[in-house]
Length: 115
Image 1 (tube, rainbow, N blue to C red):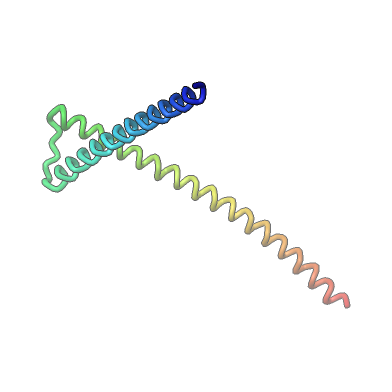
Image 2: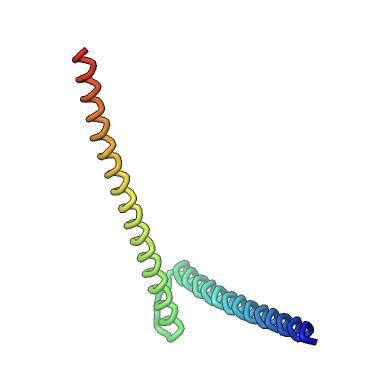
């Protein structure tokens, strides 16, 4: 009887997890659809050349577009800083290696002229 209870409990938990997962997937799908609709509206406005934002829907669309633009701008800035940091680190390594090679060359020249 105890095994049956554990089995049923596990099955119920698994079903609940499946329901939650499906709910999360549905929420993500709705968000994606909304984003696609907003993108389509933006493209339609941009293609028509009519960029008047005179309604509640237009205001929401302009806020959404501005938010998207700022997010992309921040992402570009973050990636630029990452590239700059990697470049500076690589440049530092190259400078250290150049100094080391110069030292080796001096030692080599000293040893070849001394003999």
